[in-house]
Image: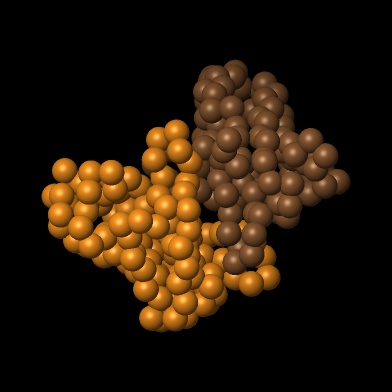
Length: 112
Length: 110
């Protein structure tokens, strides 16, 4: 099993550009999450999904949109990137019975 | 006040030492507690869950004090491979949402 995968692994954007980060999981998990991690801030929840076709806002949703059209995929979009969105983005998933979250390897995004 | 607070360290200890990390949480309704480990430039991974009765996994012991809203992690006989950042994690709401502390950095020195 691949577990949770994320693409791309690295990306550099210019201010105002848009991009989509893809998260895919092969564990048939219902719940999926997008976090960002900044130095000294820990992981902060951006958006999450409790099942196919559902999304909800987390702690820091502004500037991001998400979609969960298929159960195994969770997309994070940046419509107009800003330097404040320079961060490491982690996707995670979990099932309904246990609360361990399984994380992808992360996407390192730099906005110049 | 942050919902989950940890001493950021860094903790630099010699191999074989015992080291303890502490964490406090602010939401008294918190339901589940965990320690995650994150290696440099890698994703977080679950180290262990924390139960009210305390639990042990090899060299690692986790304790929970609900009255004081305090969680601890004890590592005995530290190994070089224990060098990592340890994240205190709390679940307080529905939808399996977790709140992460900012982490405590540990370096075990030879």
